Amino acid sequence: MKAYLALTKNQLMLAFRDKQVLFFNYLFPLVFFFLFAVMLRAERGGAVITMIVTNVLVIGVLGNGFFGAGIRAVIEREQNILRRFKVAPITPVPILGASLTTGLLLFLPSIVLTFGLAHFIFAMALPARPLSVVVFLSVGALAFRAIGLIVAAVSNSVAESNVLVQILYMPMLFMSGAMFPASIMPRWVQTISQFIPSSYLVSGVQSIVTQSESIGANWKALVALVTTFAIGLFVATRLFRWEKEEKLKPGAKLWVAGVLLPFVALGVYQLRSNDQYVRNRVLWRQLQRDDEFLVKNAKVFVGDGRIVESGSVLVRHGKIARVFDGPSPELDGIKADVIEASGKTLMPGLIDVHVHIGAPGGAYDDFNELAKEHVAERALAQYLYSGITTVKSTGDQLDASIELRKRIVDGQLLGSEILLSGPLFTTEGGHGTEYFSWLAGPQKAQALEQFVRTPKNPDEARQQVDALKARGVDAIKAVLETGRTGRLFARYSCVFSS
Image 1 (cartoon, rainbow, N blue to C red):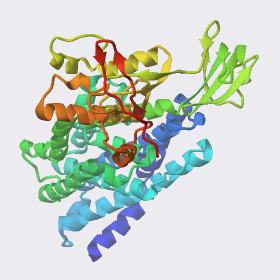
Image 2: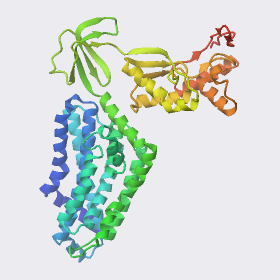
Image 3: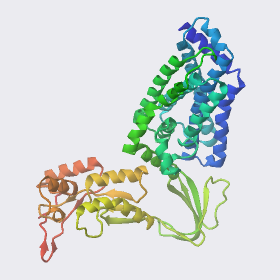
Image 4: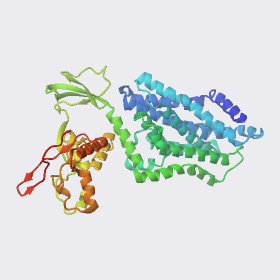
């Protein structure tokens, strides 16, 4: 323990005297911070600055691991510094442990520095879960530091370690979402990124910072990072070399690939579950929703009935912040993108208060074909592109509608928002039950459970309403339709009241 503490203290002192270490740990990430800030106009705030912060921190983790450990250790071996430790005598464990601890301690101030700059310069709110942010980033820093130590162990020279570091660093930087949002990349790139460790570091940090998720909500990525750290430390200990004359077989470099096995397993899982792809889309949608823009010089139908012949509308964080009547306002005090809308009309989104999003609007000889059409998803997209931003579902399958509403709210799907009525309240033989008369047995019972409620008395009706409220429905629909000549429906003799 004394050797470990002494080495850690010594390495920290040397690090703060080394301009190269200070540059790559602090100045290099800040170059990206201010570069991204200028390119993406971080002064607008919202999710833009949040994305910049998380990406810069991930770049810092990668640099700390690959350049800080992957190259530094090789330099010390070539300068015969490690040979001197060998005659101390000392084992590789405290040396590697000191390197990991030093890397982590050097990285932690950059977390405070990055969030501090974002807060005081660009008015970014501090994370709601700061402990989760620090813990997740710390585990990530240790994991990538461990990978860097393996690179150092299998490299026979500084030049060779540089090559290995670049082979690992560049894909992890550009294909993980650390430089560009993963969701805007081609699908094949997103597929490959699911096998890249830094992808889970990016999405995990963004989820914790942007959506205030707990570290437990990102447990899969956390377990993979912890496993990588443990495997990396073990392998680095086994392959540790004191002198540059000690050569390893070329096959030893496969250990670098071996330490990535947890992410291979996680990538295979993600290919089956699609979770990471969905998470990327949600984060990208959140970024878009939090943007700020000004639509100017349009004819504006205001929600209170006024019509502005030529005006502008400021949208901030997904909501209309202000409507300007007359000339476009000066932009000095408004930090927003400008959308020129001369000759166009801007109006509030329409609301359709009676839709059935699961109805195909046609007839099918085989109802199994209906499931292949993605009717509800397509309908919601069509409504949105027609200017209908909200729909009220007045009779659709309960579980499917709740799941679809969640996907719209989360940003997984682009479509109109849903207000959900839930199952129809009717009576036996009433309107709503006829759609499943051709079914029998468990299949019919399941269909009726999803689509209708047939309470026998007021108490049962109250219980069913309470149960649906707990599921999150927005309204209750009761059916009193009698039908038509030749097709009459049973109906309640009275309306249940509370």
